[in-house]
Length: 218
Ligand SMILES: [Fe+2]
Ligand SMILES: [Fe+2]
Image (cartoon, rainbow, N blue to C red; front, side):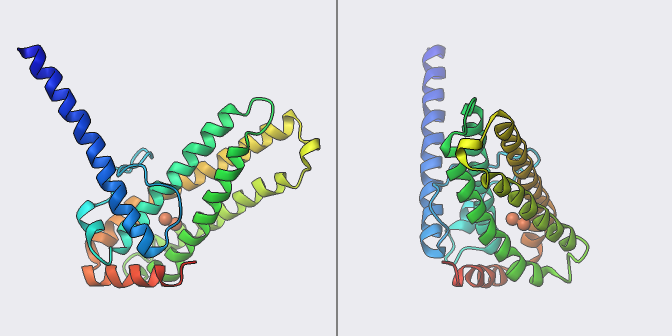
């Protein structure tokens, strides 16, 4: 009897886990459609980065329009997912580069560009008064990430036939450096930017900012 109850409990837990993932994916894809966040399926409410323990807020995500910070958190989860896929592809790249590493890196850079632009053009100016000490550091990190991404791109100038083991090692090292910078930056923003912003900004402000951020999205 006890054994049966334990089996039943684990079956219920498994079902709830699957159901919640499906439910959250459905919510975020609605946000994606409305705000033109692109492509990659949302893969879960919680972060892959140590130190980030705020899941995407389901209730806030259900609001229409959704709140700016929730949308940015959803994009963070997507960036983390790209980083994970790139690392997986690199781990398969023993003698030559797995093409998936490049295609995922392209997607990561594309999302990174629009994401950091939204933050700098819309959210940061709104928080200038309350987070004046934090924002310059985050902007500096944005610039560091762009520079690291450029160092990866420089390596891609080398023609495929000239890419040797050393090239692959360099590509792996520079890509890894870029991903580390992005994931570290996300960790900083979740704790030092989004957490206080969510506390301080009224719901109407968050909704207005979200509308502004995604109004001109391609
Ligand atoms: Fe940022
Ligand atoms: Fe961000």
